[in-house]
Image 1 (cartoon, rainbow, N blue to C red):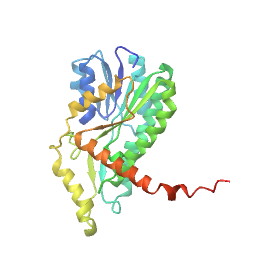
Image 2: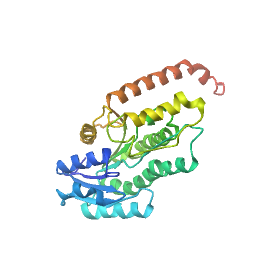
Image 3: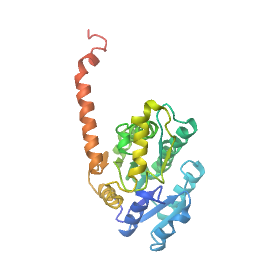
Image 4: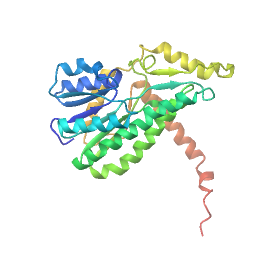
Length: 281
């Protein structure tokens, strides 16, 4: 980042990763635009440092609120150095029992809202020739788990978007990182999770069990959100920040195992795959 006191724009700050990250950025004396659907829930974050914090109402599903929030941030601080797309939630069901309304609602927030806010901030970052976009996805953005087909699909969409975006904007001086947390003690399994119960007996040992375990483990996960906030701040100060940053020991181990297995499978089937090209003349 080029600014000595960077400006962060963070969504979903009422709880979880967003709240911890907002507090850590503020405590460093950096400027922070912190948003939530109801900004009154952010009063404690702004009270201690009103000169460097700006709390705004922002529902990422509302295009007008996106436009207003980005304009207000730019008017107040004159730049945006780091955009953290953190707003989002989980939806679980078996793939077969997923409800259309719930699936679409999750995609509107996790995917389309993130796309829209990113588009709104990009002109500011391009004009600066600097900026860092951090998209909070999940280990589920790298692999699927029983009961989380639609949540994983939303996070896979963000991963693909981010990979393409990075190739477009890095020549312009911008950076893009997907942050992929494993299980963290953010009350995601309670506050930020919707479920459609699985009642089909064939899924009792897969989707239904996985969904039950998520609820039961809420509050006992190994991941520390405060340490995650420090780690996310650190990557913005790195000369070569990662494109993918997996958080938590469980998540790191799971991602490594998944990627190794995928590579092995691609290599195993490489020759039959290559043989589908037209024969060379």
